[in-house]
Each structure stands twice: as C-alpha cells, then as structure tokens.
Length: 251
Ligand code: NAD
Image (cartoon, rainbow, N blue to C red; front, side):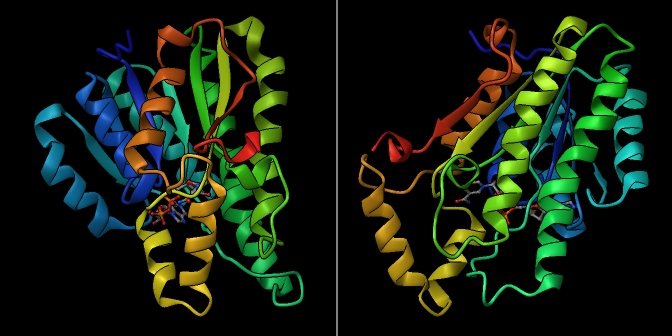
C-alpha cells in the first residue's frame, strides 16, 4: 500500500529520533532519500547504515534560508526532482513562561517555527516546477492542545500545525499535499535524556499514564504515519494534522 519506490525525499533533522527513523523507513520503502541535519556525526552514522539504499546526506541548518535552499537544490540535483519533504528538525525544551527567556523563545521559534516555514517554502518552490509533491510537517500534541512547561515549544508547534492547514489550502490546486503528524511523547534520544534532568523522571511517568494506550510511543510508529502521508496511498488527504499519540488527544 505504501510504496515510495523512486520518490525523491528530503528529511530534515534526520540524525536522530523521529527524523532518523523516518529517513530509514523511507529509504527501505524504496525512496531516494536526502537526509539533512546540523549533526554531521549523526548523519555519517546514518549513512554508514543505509548507504546501500542510495541514501545520501548533507549538513544544513533549518534556521538558515541559504542552507535550506541549498538542501532542496541538492535533492533536485541528485534525484532530478523533489517529491516529498519531511519538515522534522526541532528542539524540545521544557520550561514554563517564567523560566523561558526572550532568547529561549527566539531560539525555539527559529528552529521549530521559521525552520519549518523555510523547509516548506523551498520544497514547494521545487515541487511546483514538477507538478506536485507531498510535505509532512512534524507537529506535536503540543501543537493542538495546551500543556504545562511548554511556553515556547508549544506555541512553536502550533506554527507547524498552522502552516500545514494554510499551505494545504494555498497549494492544493498545484498538486502539492501538505499534512502533519502530531506525535504524543516519543522515546527519542531527546526524551530519554529527560530521565537525567530535574523533574524528568516524574514527567516521563506522568506522560506514559496520560496516553490511553498506557505507554510512550516509538520513533518507528511516527515514521510509519509519515510514510503513509508522504505516499500516494494518502492521495486524497491534505491539510490533516494526524495525531500519533496513543489516544492522548482523544481523552
Ligand atoms: P531529536 O533531538 O532526537 O532529533 C531532532 C533532530 O533535529 C536532531 O538530530 C538535531 O540535531 C536536529 N536539529 C536541531 N536543530 C536543528 C537545526 N537548526 N537544523 C537542522 N537540524 C536540527 O528529537 P525528536 O524527538 O526526534 O524530534 C523530532 C521532531 O519531532 C521535532 O520537531 C519535535 O518537536 C517533534 N516531536 C517530538 C516528540 C517527542 O516526544 N520526541 C513529540 C512530538 C513532536
């Protein structure tokens, strides 16, 4: 059902977590993947694992318009076109509004907000030249509902959900579908590291209990939803923000 054979795909933030799982799955489903990140060592490790699939990598900072433009151009140059962009790169700080400094706000908005805008912008510019494509933004349950201690991160994820619905309407007639996933709490490297931070273990226990399926999610479970939305199996789906959250938002 989900066949990505020969599709040219760009995945941002692919050195770890959800982005790494997604780049891996897309490559195994036959896509030609360009994996980008600021973490060159992480990209090199991913490349070692998946080089035989044709996956290639490029370092790119999603906050830098020139880097993002160049990453899209690289995918087009290597694969002849761009069919799929997964706007995934993000930082996930946990802080309440009193702890959050104006600099923290700017940083989160630069990566999770502007970074997602730039990835969509340059991907759409390439896709409209070849008659269409599919974008999947990685939003969050925090991009659809309020949570404590997400004073900058939560609003930044609302940007991801907002871009998805607005760009979906703006580009539907040009054959470009724009969707998002809204993961619940997922056991990525970043989330595992919370176990060693003040208040982290309590947060992880609370979050597991808050997901009706009774556990946290795995990066591969989010990757499967992203692969579906990116594929032609989702040909009549655009503007959707799909919870991948073990029932969290259904409560
Ligand atoms: P992660 O830290 O494991 O991976 C994020 C990746 O983004 C890293 O490889 C990092 O180097 C990269 N990155 C950071 N800043 C960047 C920049 N400026 N330019 C390019 N790459 C950059 O985190 P993750 O949990 O896999 O998060 C991936 C996405 O999933 C994020 O958008 C996050 O908001 C979203 N998300 C995560 C969870 C969760 O529980 N883990 C839940 C909902 C949504």
